[in-house]
Image (cartoon, rainbow, N blue to C red; front, side, top):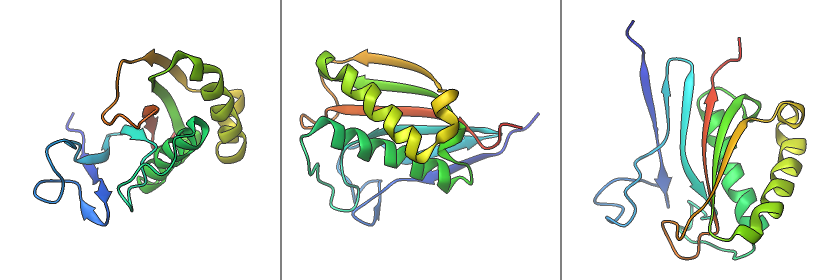
Length: 148
């Protein structure tokens, strides 16, 4: 069976995230990829893609920005945040874990009510560092175009 693959490119500062517009320290090229019914959303962190800056060092604010990026990527494919089925949360500081889960639940209550009662499978990892020193959290997600 031949599955259709569709890439949704990432843009920073209005430019497609690819050489020569973006340097080697930022190797990501796709915001998400759809294969059949599956949506793979690449690592989302608390950086504003329009300004190419991390504008806050408050954990909850970076978490909301990252979740907004996941939601935007899901919607771009024609799906919704309610169709996220798996997340991988990367944190630099273990003390942020309770804030991560609280912020995630509040976000779902507002933007993905289905996930409040049916949360996605989730893995959390504490990491020594993320792509940039100012990043506090990164979220990878897998979703589906349709739950049917």
